[in-house]
Image (cartoon, rainbow, N blue to C red; front, side, top):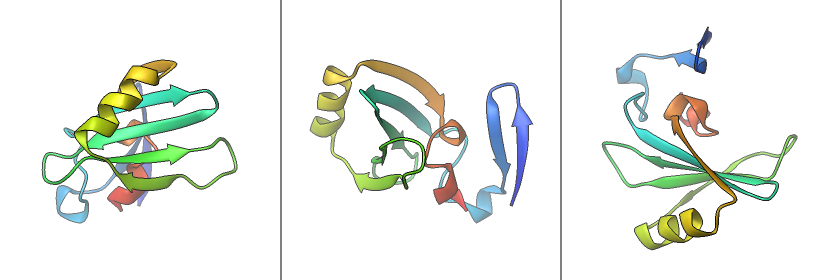
Length: 94
């Protein structure tokens, strides 16, 4: 897989046939202290979250339901809308 620098960050060069995530899928990053939670809502499939505990740790993907997403958005320190490729979930596209 190749990675390309764009004005919005890094974008992996993968064809739609090679990935379960699409660049049109919505995503949001929620920050809770030192933790980040990237919530991804693929057009085809259930929403999931990727939880990171900081540099040097492996992000953990988990399934989430609507009430969990609402809770995370309510207690977040910050919320940032992103593309899927600007989240911790982008390696799952390969």
